[in-house]
Length: 217
Image (cartoon, rainbow, N blue to C red; front, side, top):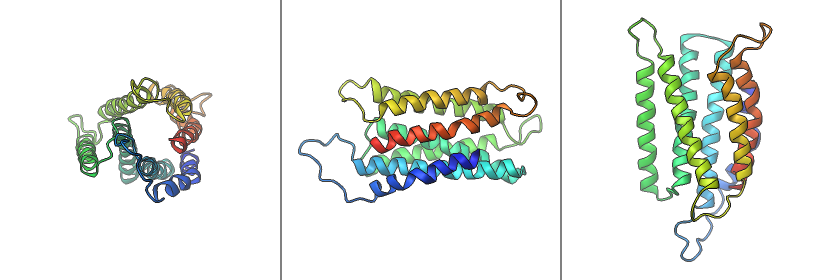
């Protein structure tokens, strides 16, 4: 299931690469607040790279559970959530100027590194990973990401209708339906299919819906 998620990214990402590597369009007169299409494509392409990396390590970890693969799987998943929060911030507030873009990225990168350092230190009860803190931070990052994007897509005061926003809404619903299995953990169905497996089996469809939004954006 992890490989299936990564495969959807590999399948659909080339179109974003072509958009990000195209010649920059000439800006319209007076349209300084418009987010460049090339930067939008580059942002979602980079997001796809980060997510593909995460799903690769997810597949490795589920095939071979060792301290190293555990650290790489959880760290790569953390990178997905932090980059998603960064991308939502950049897209929502139209952070297109290079210096501001670098500053926002540095801020989220520092938070990401600080989170990794905290969750991977030995706990008072002897555990080497703080699962509870990690879950809280990831839920907060996901909530921040989705609240920003949904407000931007559907409730912006001066914006016109966002292309692909219906796909974004469908992705939002599909992703959260799958996430319920991960957050509200339950015993394996008939002793075979557990909540974490359902989460991974359901998300390829959400990934496809996300790319339908990204290509239109």
